[in-house]
Length: 163
Image 1 (cartoon, rainbow, N blue to C red):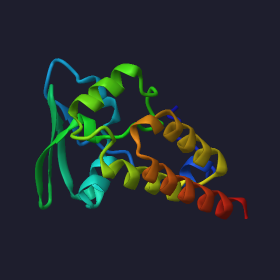
Image 2 (cartoon, helix red, strand yellow):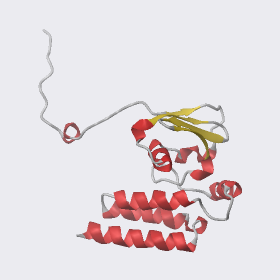
Image 3 (cartoon, rainbow, N blue to C red):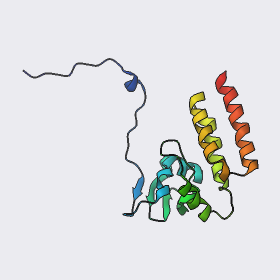
Image 4 (spheres, rainbow, N blue to C red):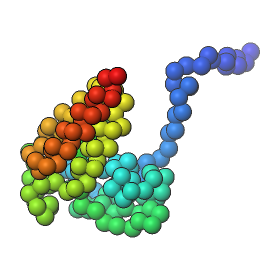
């Protein structure tokens, strides 16, 4: 007797659009850079102001990241990638690596754009606070002007999410 699968009722997972695909991030070195954990397709798309679908590949080499996509072919420093929530929090060694690479004593302008984007895309107060705590961890790397702008965006998004 052969059993046939019974039709399942629509679950929570089935009702969402699940899109599982192969990652575009390729590690090309046997030695993985410590800051490579902050490299994501979404961050690269935001950095180059392109859609994630336009990225063909992201190659993580020992000292740099190579991005190839539609209209983009560029090497990027690991220090350009801001910390994210999905991985371990930044350590003191990370700050040393960042400051060694930056041309000034503060993070690149892109970090402000990135965290502003994350605040605006937060779907809940809890997620907004998580991003806020992460910014609090890296605030020593941000200028006072950038911190003030991020605080303004945070407060505005918090007010929107509360209603």
